[in-house]
Image 1 (cartoon, rainbow, N blue to C red):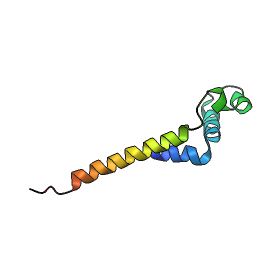
Image 2: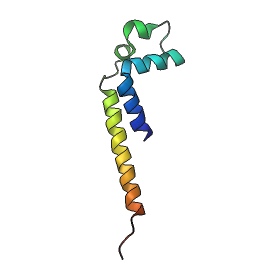
Image 3: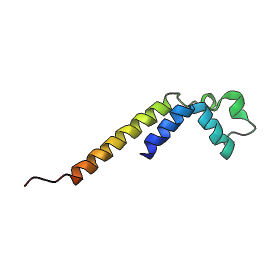
Image 4: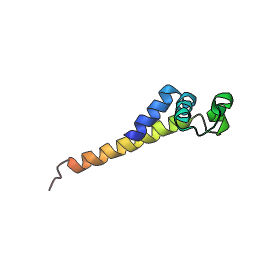
Length: 77
C-alpha cells in the first residue's frame, strides 16, 4: 500500500515538482542546480517513473489482498 500511495502522490504532484521539493529539503544538488537544469533531466530520471511505481504498488496491493483473502476464507473439508 505505501508503494501505491507514493506512486499516486508522485504522479498527481508531478515528478519534477516532487523531486524539487525533496531536493530543497535534503540539498542533494547544490546551489539551486536542480531549478536551473531540472532535476529529472539532470539525473536522467525517466518521466514515466511515477506510472511504473503506481502500477507496481497496485499489483503488490492486489497480491497482498488476494493472499489475505485466501488465508481468511474457510477451507472445505
